[in-house]
Length: 44
Image (cartoon, rainbow, N blue to C red; front, side, top):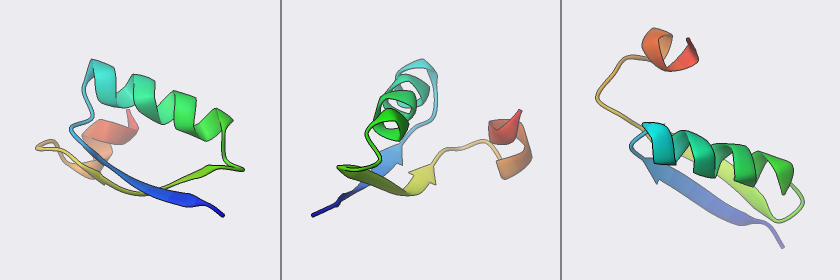
């Protein structure tokens, strides 16, 4: 069973959590990321 996760805020801590969750893709799936910055800024 995969746990769906949404991240609210993609600052230092949000990016750290995202990296940890990506390493555990067998358990977690990131379904949404919410931040004030636009998509291009987040991709950078």
